[in-house]
Amino acid sequence: MAKKRILSGMRPTGPLHLGHLHGALANWKRMQDEYECFFFIADWHALTTDYEKTGGIAQNIREMMMDWLAVGLSPDKCTMFVQSHIKEHAELYLLLGMLTPVPWLERNPTYKEQIVQLADKDLSTYGFLGYPVLQAADIIMYKADGVPVGIDQVPHVELTREIVRRFNYLYGQVFVEPQSILTETPKILGLDRRKMSKSYQNGISLSDSPETVRKRVGEMITDPQRMRKSDPGDPDICNVFSFHKMYSPAETVDEVNRECRVAGIGCVACKKKMAENLAAFLAPIYENRRDLAENPAVVDEIIAAGDAKARETARATMAQAREAMHI
Ligand code: TRP
Ligand code: SF4
Image (cartoon, rainbow, N blue to C red; front, side):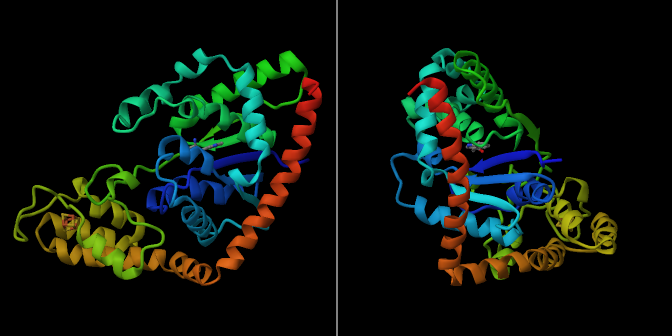
């Protein structure tokens, strides 16, 4: 039986962190053996909120591909490409725009939320409103059966399904209605106990060196009630302890759990232990990434090969779409 096809993308807005690793990337990595996978860097989508400063995008694209490769996404198993390299996405976006009612876009919950959340940005553009139409083009171009995404993206996939139904109804059966495949994201908090997020600068990046990891862990907020080393602490409300549970062996977790409550261990020592385990966990990724950074031509070749594979599928789809529309 043919493998089901999945597709997902990320906007190249900056270095990926532990939240991405345990959420989307771990999930993609698992899926690459089971599905036919298309993963792409949504650089045009990055423009919808950051059209004023575009200078960093080219570098961010390469960095993102290095992060993907370093964590173990393999070009032998999945097609990894860059959205703007496949011009067919722009053509399909335009065609879908002709048949997508504006009210569908205006009532999109993610759209409404972002307008409020990113109040400092001017999001009154046509491109921002059309974000989900471009996303629909990305998805249906490859006739993806499934789209692994976080919960915030589900409305976009839903809208994609509506657009597919409308297209197929008007012009005949060309496109496939995709399903969302919801990614379980373990809630991983940043150094300041807020959600780990690039915009808060409170994360640990996959590209951070072991020294940076140690330094960043040193800055972590612990049990806020524990003022002095002689005060007992509560690991259950301490983010350092959550990290121990992810990166330290069971004995260390037990020991910290016990000793923290009786003030038998100080936060500085506790963080040091955790930092070593986290640095060890990240070391292979860091080393892979360093090798890739030394060979930018290899990264560019991997991108070019992924582009070529994606383009082949995109061309075939567009031939069908144009024929169905008689243009
Ligand atoms: N909107 C997605 C995000 O911000 C990125 C994206 C663009 C995407 N096109 C896509 C995700 C197609 C899945 C499928 O995370
Ligand atoms: Fe947190 Fe460790 Fe300090 Fe306890 S000892 S409060 S677990 S950092």
